[in-house]
Length: 300
Image 1 (cartoon, rainbow, N blue to C red):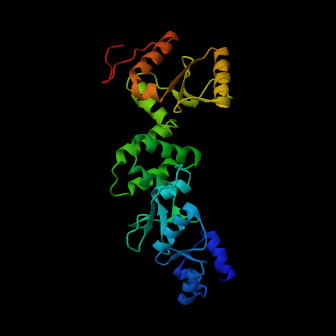
Image 2: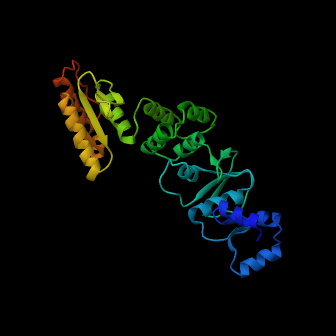
Image 3: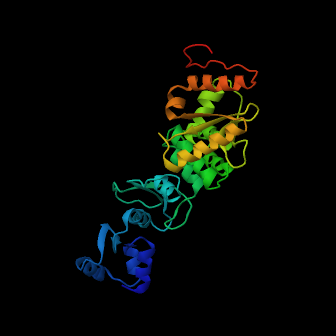
C-alpha cells in the first residue's frame, strides 16, 4: 500500500474504507488479494482493518460507515471527551447516510457538527444528548464534568437545549444545570442541596469554599463555622484518608466543626442528616428552626 495510505490507517486506528483505498490507487482486485494475504481484514462491508485498533477502531469504522459528514455522538462522544469513563459497546454515529443495521453501531440520521479525530459532537451537544438517557445523578455527573473541568459555559448547554425540539429530560437538565452553576460538583452534593438543605429549610451554604485558603469544603456555613463534607466513595484509603484527617484537624484549630456524610446517609436518611446539621448550626447561633419535609416521620 502507498505510504500515504499507511499513514492514514495509523491516524484512523488501523481502519480504512473502500473509498479511501480506491482513492489511493488500490483497486478492488488488489483489495481482494490483500484480504487473502491477511494484510487486510474485513470489519464490515466496505470497511477494513490493517491491524488491531481496539475500541478506537470501532469508533473510526462508525465514522467511515457514516460518510464524509458523520460524527460520533452520545456515549462514544462522551467517552472521547472525558465525560464518562467507560467506552460504550455500541457506537452512535450521526450521519446523513443510511446503512444496514449492525449492533456495533447505531446510525442516526440527524445533522450534527463535530470536531476532533475521530470527529465527535461538541461538548454542549454531547451533554444534551446524553442527558436524554440518564437519571438525575448521571446528568449531574456529566454536567459537573463539562462545566467544572472542561470549562464549558452553562449558556452553551442551555443554547443547545433550547434548539432541541424534543427532550425527555428538558426540565430536569435545566434544574440540575442551575445546581451545578450554584456550586454543587457531584450527584451527592446535589442530593444534599435538595433533600437535606432545601427540603428542611436550612440556611443556604457556600459551595466549594472554606475558612482556610488551603482547603475547599463541599458545604460551608460560614456564619456558623460548620463545614459539611460529602463523599460518594464507600470509604477512604491511604493518602486520601490522611489528607481528610489533616484538614479536619486544621479546621478544628480555627474553631470550625466538620460533619461528614456519604451516600448511605444522604440518599437513605436525609431527614436524619438534616437534624444533625441543624443541631450543629443551632449550637453555633443559628436562630432558625428546621422544617419537616414530606419524608420526615417525626417533627424536629
